[in-house]
Amino acid sequence: MTRALEIRSSGRFGRPLRHLPEVDSSNTEALRWLDADPPAPEGAVVVADRQTAGRGRWGRPWISSPESSLLFSLVLRPAWDLDYLGLLTVGAGVACAETLSGEAVIPARLKWPNDVVVGDRKLAGILTETRASGGAIDGVVVGIGVNLEVPSSLPAEIRGRTTSVTGEARRRGATIPGRDRLLAAILEHIEQVYDLIGSEGGRRSLTKRAEALMPMLGEDVDLFFPDGSRQRATARRLLPDGALEVETTEGVVPIRVAELKRVRAPE
Ligand code: BTN
Image (cartoon, rainbow, N blue to C red; front, side, top):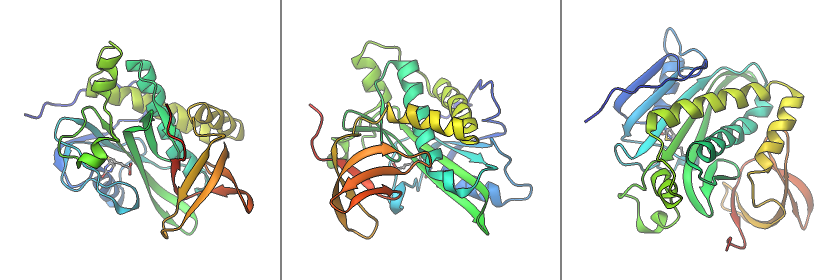
């Protein structure tokens, strides 16, 4: 049964809020809202109890079972230019990881660019989508899926690489935060992170905060690119636009779009 969502966010984000028992994808719904008349204002949020066509990066499906996930999409209308979009995705990851550490003592970390992980297991994923015209941003949708439980419908192979807020909190004897509380806390955290992206000093400090959550820095990683190619590199640092600086046999280069796998799994 679906219960009304109660979020007590003290900030700008989460107003107005559409809470839907079922939708194809909260990101798709938020993009439709951006295109509507009147369009979704900055801070608008779509929360779904279940998605019938949840989307992940690179056209992959995002599988979540009813009531076992926090699924939401936040509408933003940033005044800054497209160059910093990568940092927004990383910043949303910082907001999720820091919230989970604070609310549930979960040592959540970032797997650049859009995964929140505990060890090598994924806890949450972020999908940022943009409406832009002529180099300017009309609107951005930041979609976040947090596993409250590991969805039972996940294929076994993905299940082994997935974890949940409930499982991680229980393992540490911590109180399991409710969905509404987690949503409000993440929204407040994203708001704080978002405000940093507007200034050079803010971007520098956000980059440092993100780097502190990225255990793969200094390690060898395999990079997988959308065209199917792959490259071994050493992850060096996060750049202020959210790109990952890596060192390859060809030199030091910024990477903006890739998936990353650590060559040596953590103990
Ligand atoms: C990824 O890890 O590939 C990104 C997953 C993003 C999933 C969330 S769930 C809420 C929002 N709606 C979607 O369809 N996708 C995002």
